[in-house]
Length: 566
Image 1 (tube, rainbow, N blue to C red):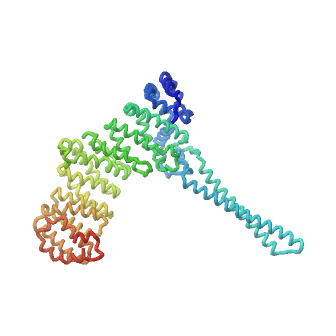
Image 2 (image 1 turned 90 degrees about the vertical axis):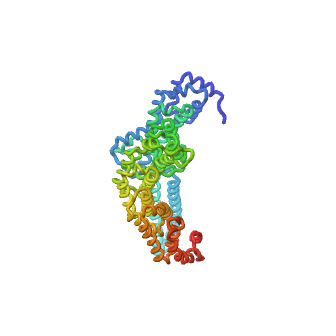
């Protein structure tokens, strides 16, 4: 890359006139011009431009930068907040208000091309009909000089009608094309009642892009830039949460490629700010928004950052803030998808790092640490929310909450003792769900509950019998996990007579379903995975074992897993 030898002396000269230099370059018509914007960015990056960067980081220049580069998008956000107009269905006009031209997309261009081809076809058809009409007119003139020819007159009239129809079709297609072109015109004329009176334009998008680049340079040379400029951070967080950024990410193909990196740049800014300010846990929940919609951009670094932060960086008090912030989100009217992502990307990694007592490099958490992260009030609030709003959650969110309960039962059972009645009531209602994934996750948690707390034998047997009959379930892995949890605890939770009843029911089901290969495979899988529970009754199972071998493993069409089981 060729660089002018005059840039080094120019940068030294601008260091002596920082105010005039910043005022010169921070003008809309210059920042929007690559000749000036590229020069300014190159000058800012130079090692000898430290005084200029320091001045650009000052209060006066920061305000100027926000007003010039981000005035339009921030004004749109403020107008939306002040407007009582609800968010409706997105249209071409409403999308254009955020700088999105739907007619730039390949699909829209193909649509216009189809209409253009249709016009050409109808124009060609019209030319053919005009030629036919001309020939018939000449024939009619020749025939009329000799004698009256009624047939020629009829053919001529039919040809004229065909020409008129072709002209009408062509004009209608041209009007349709003109209408599509008018819709494709990138101009937004907001309604009087529209909150967005000044929409995003290409110029506004370019100024925002240049603003991002300038801040990016300043951060690369001063890691404390964002923590020291709350107004910049506040503006970027507004942009991150804004409807415009969300729509521009959803409609990437309709945006110029130059502006595809808007969300990526903002994500890097927010992760940089969060690293410098781990006490602000709200930023972690803001970053989750990027995973609410698919994108062609790789945001895996955000996921890794969230995992590392909640696992390694946050203190016990800050982890407690994360839990409280999650409970506030869980009880709010926010989307279930956001709540699910919060569990998956923040709460689970945080709890795994807290309970990793099986790893030699990390000692078990002390009671004091657990009380700081999960105080009794937090546990109580969680159970209250589940009992109050649990039935209204989406099945996917319900499964994630059940996973959370399972983790808590496994690691902090003592803190859940006083809430066990409310917990089992909530979980038992889930077992009645029509969604198989939710229902069998509920069985897994109930099995964990039986292992942890004293449970009435009737309930334990009921859960055991239900899982024995669940061989047709599409959630086989969940059924197997529930049985692997429940069955080893049966000798401890049932008396000898009650355990005998469980064995009798297993034998009865094996006898009744002797012709059902899936049911037999399911039963024998349970027995082979938990031999210590059934070894005392092996004499009762041996006759059934011999009869089952031919059905499970000797059939030529038997699945490989059945052959291995036999």
